[in-house]
Length: 265
Ligand code: F6R
Image (cartoon, rainbow, N blue to C red; front, side, top):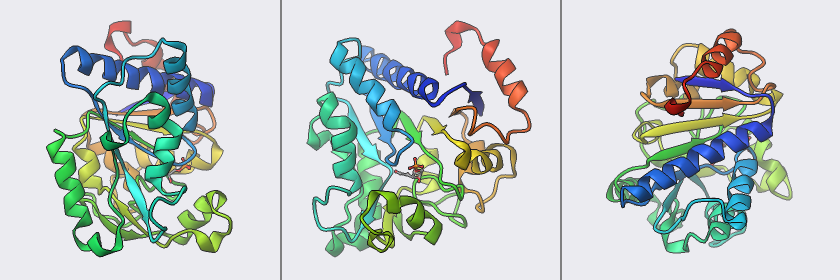
């Protein structure tokens, strides 16, 4: 796992955008458009804004044929609700990049199909050839996607119940805390581990403890993000505040600053 502490959240956004664009360009050069795994929530927004700004300035890559897969989705919102994660990712990223809606995927929260929704999403991911690069955020309780503490490290896409802490954290998007759904569909930790590159980004002091537990603590279902320790290619981009509880921060900075330019992330 590579930990990269950077001075500011804007630095995290720029490096995350560079990494995503690099992948999109490499896959296009191979003639196989990239499959991107996308996170919602607040943390990726500056990264998405950076990608959109470069696209509009004409300096970004072509997104022709790029397919995207969301990590998770609320269950119980009316179809097409503006706060559904599918509507959110279209508004915040894929529409502005010109990626057509039929190439933008998320777990299907339609109530009638819930018992099979997890397996159907796994099948969609398999049919797409798997995710090349999965962008991840982290919850204050260490969750990734909506795998809350205690989630199986080998889990697949399935329905889960949100912790009260996560509902409170996400209440800012809804009118009232009680409006936050209790249930979600989420890729499992085993699903996420199948992506070829994991790129976790975290900014702000509120994430510092979860980040330190995930990357320097033991591998444990009590901190779902610690599952990154099992992945052969996991990168963690942090601003100074999110890196503030790391014991080995000096070492991580030293390693990153000394990297040969050709190596990339
Ligand atoms: C959202 C997701 C969540 C968020 C996490 C952090 O698709 O998978 O795990 O990444 O809750 O959310 P923010 O970035 O809003 O702090």
